[in-house]
Amino acid sequence: MSSCIDPVPDILTLSPKFWNFHLDPIHATANNCLVLLTTHLNLCIGTLGSYLKDRPDLGPLIEKLLKFEINGQFLLTEVGWGVDADELKTTATMQPDGTFDLHTPYHQAAKFMSPTTPDAGMPSGGIVYARLIVDDEDRGVRPFWVLLHDSEQMEDGVISYALPKRAGTQATDHAVTFFNHKRLAKDSLLGSLGKPADPAAHFSSIVARASIGTLSLSTVNVPCLKLCTYIAAKYSQRRTVTAPDGHSQLPLLHYRTHQAPILHALAQSLVWAAAASHAAATFASPTAPAALKSALAISFKTAIQAQAQASLTTLSARCGAQGLYEHNQLVSCQNLMRGNSLAEGDVVVIAVRLVTDLLVHPDHPPPPLAFPDAPPARLAAGLLAEARKVYDDAAAADDPVVFNAKVLPLCQGVAEAIGRSVAYDAARAAGVAADVLRVFEAGCVSAGEAWFVEKLGWARREVAEREERALEELGERFDELVDGLGVAAELGITYIRPYGPILRGFNIVISIA
Image (cartoon, rainbow, N blue to C red):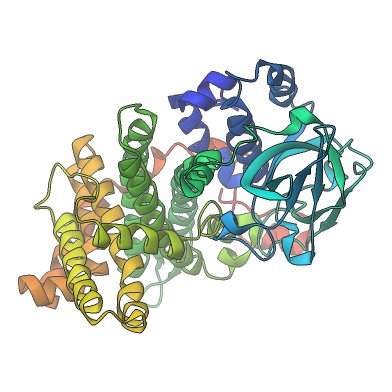
């Protein structure tokens, strides 16, 4: 893989290689590898590496992981505890000899989703989060290194039940994992035995790599958007329908109903690529405040997930029945990134967390913008101001029912608007072409059309005409921009060609060419 990252320093320092790895187009076509690699590199090795300074004895283990002699997993959430994983129930009880007894007390406490079966044929171990019990005292959640299987047999005390295949994605052995009084060595504990003074802050620190994954996994939307835009564009150029004259043939791309979604997805892919670079630089900066990094990651994920899912759905539909087949990639990319809506933070929950923090703490502003007068920025500021008014009224009423009914439903929309404004701002500052920015801006305005009509007095026809002009201008560079997406090389097996070969032999993969 061209962007393959180097050992631990790249992972721990969040170097450009770390971020570029997630932007590699190969993930859009080999998406089961993405799940395994991001878990292995970011969550498992990243967590172990954070203890390496005080635990040099972890070096040989990390070396084995880097060589893929062991596949690394990350077992945090449980069947009954997902977004509230700090309440997990798996226990690790310290024994008189200093070893630990790792145990799943009941079914709801089983670890959920991590691929832990021996199906892959290589040994596996993982970071397992459990409640540390010392002398009958619960000392909070801790990470432990646990061997899971030797590639053929599960380790004693470890039980893995494979889950069904996720719909519309390549097969991965996601599983439910139980521990039955699994004995762990003294050095399996990562961290100290002491009870943390601030349990919430301590939990955040030991799952910090998951917060990084909130952003890094979300950037995979960029290659997915690029690949699907390329496929839909080439298909719409080749596929023809009978023209109104009843004789000549016109490509589907002749019609604005096909042009618009492809041009919007094209602009989104280019803007979000620039935004990903900006967010990565902020995350890698040792001086950037933790609150800024969190706000940036959450707003980025919430916004790009919403835009990408909407665009991939439409692109698939514009390819007709062909868009429904996994080998044509569109629906596979859509389902891959739909999973990201839940991984490393459910978008609804993290949006609520971000926006309520902004409302409760006015001294915690959203990420700063260089172009606060741009329409995406004005929309984000306007929606946040509206939410603050609703929140103040709910707080005055001192009624949790009012907060639940009126404030929570606003949070995702506000977070998405903030994320889009940050993306536009970063792309503009990075010098992304004006015609690309105008189409992205038109999409932002369409998403908040009611606000622009109500607050700025824009007529609906004016909104539509702004979009029409932007699409017309960007369309003049259609071939140049589509061919410049850099994804054609990943289509070694290319997609969506006429049905003749399929009818002659059902084992032939269809192609664009």
